Amino acid sequence: MKPIDRRERIAAIVKETSRVSVEELARMLATSHETVRRDLALLSERGVVRKVHGGAVHTQTALESPYGDRSVMARAEKLAIAERAAQLFEPGDSLLVDAGSTTTAFAEALARAGHFTVITNSIMVAREMWSVSKRSEVYLLGGRYSGENHETVGPHAIEEIHRLHADHAVLTIGAIDPTGIFMDYNADEAYVARAMMASARQTTVLADSSKLGRRALFQVCEPNQVDRLVTDRPPPLPLAEALRTASVDVLIAEAVGLQ
Image (cartoon, rainbow, N blue to C red; front, side, top):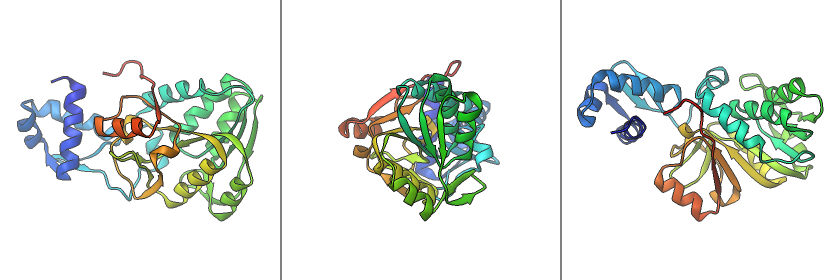
């Protein structure tokens, strides 16, 4: 079994059983305990499972890792997604961009690509757009400040978004379930994402593969409300079929050096 296939199988087993030991996985996959431990460490780093003593447990739908942890998880994948996504937009476009570690990486790549108008609720996105290149216009939305994720949220931010008419919404989400439902762990962030989608002509979602086929607590949108998904690996078959049926354009940005 190829390493990527074995890791996908491990992720599926953990999801089905909620908790599984290294010994059980080694037996089911006919491989060594050390190989399983290495795979679990990688899957845990990517946020697919949560590694615990002696095995792994399924990640919870109501909890997300702190921003500082997420910013280093799947770093190579997020950088590849960011570079691929930045190629999708033409200089002069207006973009609503939400808060997240992947959209922060995207902002850095976008700033190098030309002049854009970016409206965001993320201090990190605004900082990247400004520090990399001062050619773009950057607007920071007001609202209640959430220090944990360096963003503004709440009714004031939503009201400001509804007054805008942008070319694009560029969003990052917490999970996409097997039926293609785009989801998030944070209600405030889900509301911001919905408002940005409603105020833009097109919606592009950036999500590394650890988020594919997973569930979170709050629904953001149906798959037919998304125009493009930029990720680092092809989605699992049930999700791939759901996205194809909904006419979502799936773009794969392969991270260099990954198996």
